[in-house]
Image 1 (tube, helix red, strand yellow):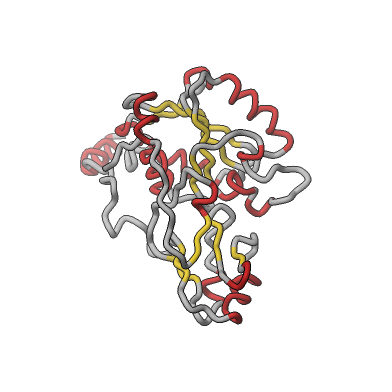
Image 2: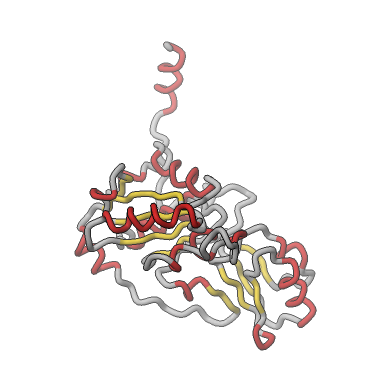
Length: 252
């Protein structure tokens, strides 16, 4: 016990700054994909053929990548010799619109920022209730780690609560299996309005690997209205943290 207390006294202040420094993310981290210009038809076909979730498409010969379906396996980066798709280290992936997750080699569209209204409604704090609607616990683990001293989610005024009656927002992980659909709807209905719904992870956004399964729905927005999409499989804790803070317009 004495050794533990001594070691803790030597650890000092360990909460990371946010936004993080360049050396915070691990070397194998795969962030925002980049789609190159001038891609050959052969390279496009290679990327489309190796994607396990159908996240890459090429309508009319123009390649697009749906972050809501992407599980960030990196197979497209490895398979395509022309490097049609590469992954950067950009961790800020969240979008308030579903079509804002679809990337192409065209300039990204600007999203209208509703953050001022959300901040006006909820003030400087946000209470969240989390529901695992058939997830594998990977997204749940990365959400849980936000409560550790390293990330210290509470410093932003964001906390997870035990009851939907006390929550301003609902964080949902998993594809919403048929067994969990009723529980999710009851939790949503138990929350007082106004309320937010945040879909975390590829499963919650599109169904992920379980898309079109007879036992699961294709994401949360097939059941409830979604206000924020945070892609990833699972999303890095910093990606989740950025999404939660951006919706409150806490960071300038």
